[in-house]
Image 1 (cartoon, rainbow, N blue to C red):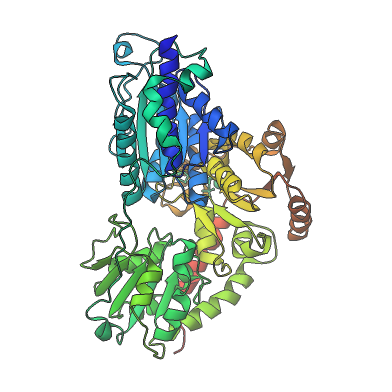
Image 2 (image 1 turned 135 degrees about the vertical axis):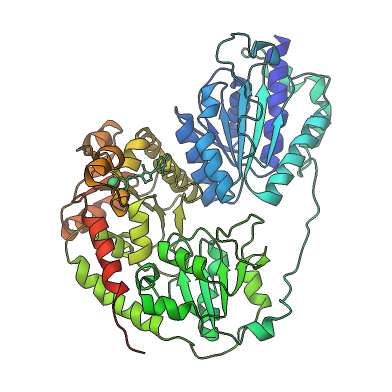
Length: 568
Ligand SMILES: Cc1ncc(C[n+]2csc(CCOP(=O)(O)OP(=O)(O)O)c2C)c(N)n1
Ligand SMILES: [Mg+2]
């Protein structure tokens, strides 16, 4: 029994120290080996220091935690048992790493004597996520030979690494049996916890790292460069960093191309379409300097522009990751964009190139006319702002629809947009959206494709926990329509890429006890939305569209704009 008690003591130290590092949510998948961690997490929830969430599927749970981390500012913890349970967290760990979201993954493990000897549910877990985590600790088997001071220092050092580099911590925690039937007072008064219990009365983490303030300095040649002809490309940015870019760029008279994840109400919307115009692209390539704020640009044509541009290139992004797939000779600022703007005063100038504005304005009416008044993929993408709640946020899945929204819509300034564009998987999109809904506790619209929904179908279970209007748009074009954009022979495409299935989602919604509607027209959709926003729960709205319509109109808009002649 003393082993069971000591396991709990060990788990208590680990969890207490991560809670002091800011963890507020702990996501738990069921399992026996993780019992000491689970029961300590429950204890923390009982004293209202954390919120515990559960899910039966570790892949979904990992993405759910990612969603919580995206919408909050603190690391989110995940507890999983040993075996493939731990392996199923891998996709979310990759996505969190690529995007710099802070997860603390606690995998329970068998002690060393049970590894590689035929013991049940025992796999090789140390370093199982390779070099994705910013730090990994493979803990020893719990033992009084290790002081609580050691345990606390080790964890705080890892958490510090996470604060510096953003990403995932992996704690692999072996526990020997027995795991159950502990006496709470025996845990509480265990002599090994004496120093720890004294520390509990203090507020701070075991290691308090002094804040390092580094000021953003003005680039020595800014007075020279700011007089030049510039282009500003804005990728994914946190909200507070995108504020002020539009005004700054307008003063400079520079051309702005912004991504749907930028938080900008684009001054030159539909860049993915108008940049298809050969003449405008040629002129833009004459720019003397390109500033890129943020990264992960969705648009193929903005990416192509960046690839072709060979002039002065500055990349401003707070992380210290390499973020330029085109390997420009460049000046890189590892700073927050709003700090950079403050350090680099704009110069009032006239726009040096007027064609993008003319073409962008032309696109507004041209797109409207081409998509028509029916409810379809392209019209939904163009009019996304019509379906959004005023105080909510938008989650966009991957594949064709996110590209359509990026190309065809204009969002209000600062509207929160979430995506999983780190590895752009279609595997955990529903679960991520559920995490965002829970963390923001505000209305959410999530929009994803039919294959993406099928992939993550059991994550519909997570939406029972939401307590505010949450709307899941499933854009059902019967398979992966993104592949229509590829030059693959029709029959091969249908059979091996697109995977049309003929399914609809009414029964899936029913199985998970979620509201469901399938509107046919905009008028239908508007009345469905009215009801959905009146409910403090989730609604699945299936938009069934002709399989190729979305990709066809996208291609046709690009083709028509490519050759268009414009004045100026
Ligand atoms: C986990 C994972 N597997 C495979 C892919 C490759 N992939 C990209 S888009 C896509 C099809 C998605 O289909 P759907 O969700 O219906 O979206 P649509 O293309 O119709 O917009 C696939 C399989 C991926 N991104 N992630
Ligand atoms: Mg589809």
